[in-house]
Every structure is written in structure tokens, then in C-alpha cells.
Length: 130
Image (cartoon, rainbow, N blue to C red; front, side, top):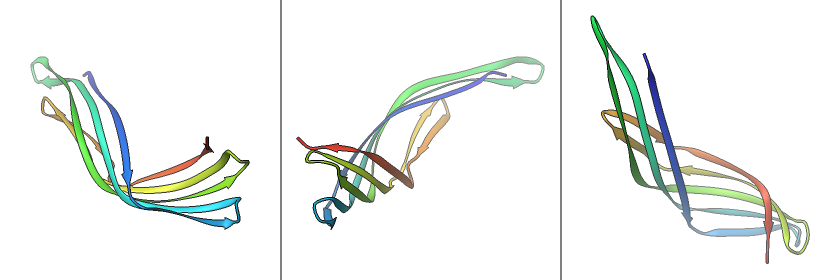
């Protein structure tokens, strides 16, 4: 029995909503909050190949492939903490919660699904200002 399932997806995310930044330690440390509409564009490619056993007969080979696009809307809320290292560089860390729907790709009677229902993103990085 040979069963292979492959799902490849490219996900693009946009956020639209208010943002507020509050200085914690003057000119060095700041906390920010944001929230609003989250939009995901999902481009997925799904392929499968399976062997279906049949008593007394050779296995039946079944396969399919194709692409699918989804546009999902939801909400997000997030918070960041930034520490100014010098005039142009900040160290930034934060968390963001996003709630959107699911993306499904159906090919040849088989379904692949990506659940974006409740997502939590953690960030750590540097910010550079020109």
C-alpha cells in the first residue's frame, strides 16, 4: 500500500487596526498594544497518491492534485515591548493572538485543511529606523 499526501501553502497576512504606544521608561522602553481586522490570503497546492486494496484483485491506484486560493478574515490583538539600544536600533519582543477560519483544498475527493482558528505568534527581533 502506497499512500502519499503533500500539502504546500503560501500564506500572506495583513492587519488593519489601531495601535497605541506607551513609554514605560522615558525614551528607552516602550509598550505597545494593537488590535483589529486580520486578513489571510492562502495559496495551497495539494497532491495525493494512494493504493486502495481490493480483495482478489490488483490494488486500485487513485491520485489527484491541484491548487486552491482562500481569503480568510478574522481578528487579532497583540502587544510588543521595545528597548531602544541606540538612535536607530530597537530590540523588540511581543505576542499576537489571531482568530480566523480554515483553508481547505479538495482534489479527487480528498481534502487537506489548514486550521488557522486560534494562532499565537511570538516575535523577537531588531527594529532599524532610517
